[in-house]
Image 1: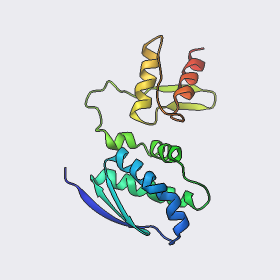
Image 2: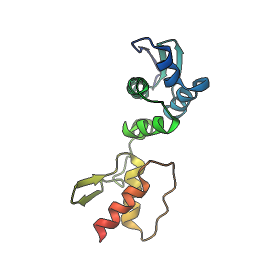
Image 3: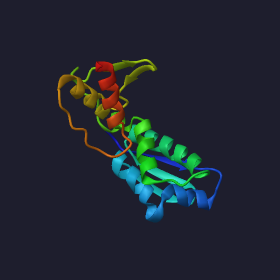
Image 4: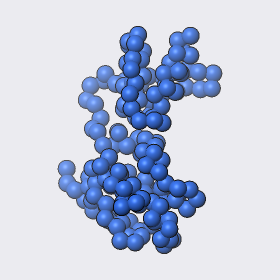
Length: 156
């Protein structure tokens, strides 16, 4: 797999918005770089993203979404993490499993059907259904309690 480079321009030019997006000492950009294994260089509203093609496309989409959000609210590391979760980044960063051990698990509720968004959520749901006791450990806001309660309601 070869590394590629993408030039991205975020408009309109608004230094306050760009500072909000990048974070103090570019902490927000570094968080995205570590998670997606890309390199992000910026000068003003010009961004240069280097990495694998899928990771570059995901980074571009996340930067656009966060730049739009930066106009009206303060960007936090938690918000960046959740935006990457929404974009199913885990499926892009990690190759898809070869075996069929991670088949889709659906939970039926009165309000609709729930399923895991990323590979970690799908694995968590499978383990909940396969074992009597499970421990879900991870960052806040990733859906651990929500999925566990949904499984409990379905079992009830």
